[in-house]
Length: 249
Ligand SMILES: [Zn+2]
Image 1 (tube, rainbow, N blue to C red):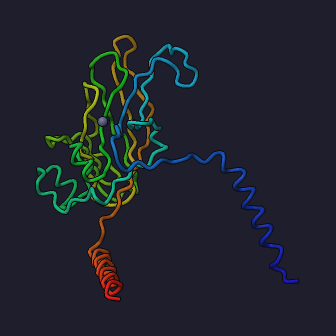
Image 2 (cartoon, helix red, strand yellow; image 1 turned 45 degrees about the vertical axis):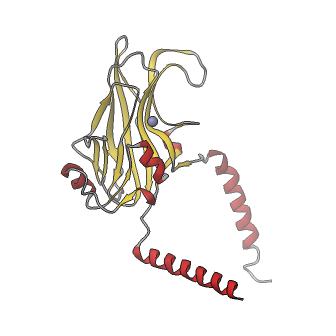
Image 3 (spheres, rainbow, N blue to C red; image 1 turned 60 degrees about the horizontal axis):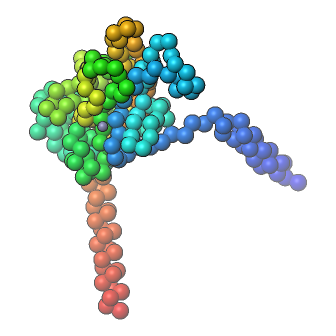
């Protein structure tokens, strides 16, 4: 008998137990890559989300809100598709191009433009608040492994938030007073970014309310390289040729 024979069943058994122990604790991560999503949505809650009981002090809750679902930020991967890539940022003013570089990936504030590209239509929203007093969103951290810079800016090119690599930039917070607004979400390089965000609001009855700090994860997909485009072109050409040959036969 070969000495290695008993190893395989034992290994499989080990895997089985590992899966049995860990599977119930694994969180399902939902990838959002298209459609309307209020990425930074803060809710003003007066009842406990789990029990439905009234809260003695209202709670601010940060989430990701789509037209069909509401997610905890930690359970969502926000994908910035390659169609968000723009080869030139020259149409933006210098503070923005300084952060993004000559080319960038941008989820457009313009809903129609975003829909045409098939990318996330990304907004910022407040829900359930008793009035139009300002809610402030603060960028409290950026991942040390972030592959590039991030800038959140308005349709009129006003910067709301900025991060330079793993450092929060000089634009670290912004406020909204109305319920809902859409912004441009710009990234200077492909790869995975994380950002820690917090919301705060001064309540007439309860004073300063702050949400928990939540981590948001974005995955920016590289644009097709020129080499890949050439290969794709050659493959398409080959398909046409083959098709032609079949017709000829
Ligand atoms: Zn929206």
